[in-house]
Length: 262
Length: 154
Image (cartoon, rainbow over all chains, first blue to last red; front, side, top):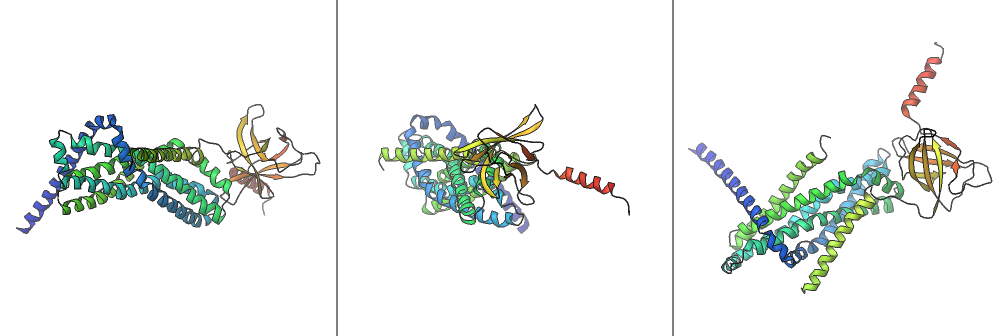
């Protein structure tokens, strides 16, 4: 019967998905468990900070600049209708600090650093480097996964903060320098409206959560990839797709918790 | 890459990230305060400051001349005491009038200074004697209703 077959198909894929989530969660806790040794060998984390954080700097700064400039232009066009161009700074800063900074930086981080992590670990697996480590009684999660995990968690909030800071200057450049919004009201209204705890700290918490999600997904996909060329390429694609969706869904949940309903 | 090179770059990365956070907190957020460089301070009492905020602009003839430093309630006279920083380049006469005005219909509030004819100039720490408070919509409507009710019926 085709109907029964279709339903069986749905059941199969559901079980598969739940099973994968379970394995990923176990992988996450294993990573936390084996993190101790990577803190004792901190140079491993520093090396990964270089390849995830420092190498993502250029893309984050350039993207932040342009996002801020676009916000400045669009914000001015809309606020002009209500004669409140002086609130441009508020709009640019709140938009960046609360939402665009953490979210766009995390999306860029997922495609820049996350995909690289997956490909690297997947290739290590395909060339049996991970099995070789196990043979030498080196736990691959402690040696390979945990340093990358902590590097991702450390660099994500820093990258998001840089994105927001550069974006505010992008908005300043377009709004104040080019269009001619009053510089004083741009900054003073911004400072009056942006609260350190409510806005900036919540943005940092967001980027921290996104960083955790992206690195866990990327590392798990790499570690779980079939050890073939095709398997690694599929895992890299899945990393970018899954972590982007995870970022956007988590963002909604976090925003609802932080800013909604109060 | 050499180990020291990596250390250097990671150091730069972390310092830049922390600097961005500090900049967000101080310049974008409300942890820092905006200062006018090279300024003198004067103060004025208003019966109602409306929506005036610290760091609001002070204008004379539409030109930005200073910033509002602080707004506090003086419990001696139960009026708002507004401390202002005025740019040293601009001097105002002693009988200058300070008014709280609104830029545009929905815009922010600022203090407008109307210069009088006195030959003596305001010095650091002196007070603006004549002020005009912010326009409060409810009071305005109340006055309008009152004056309407006083009109003889036609």
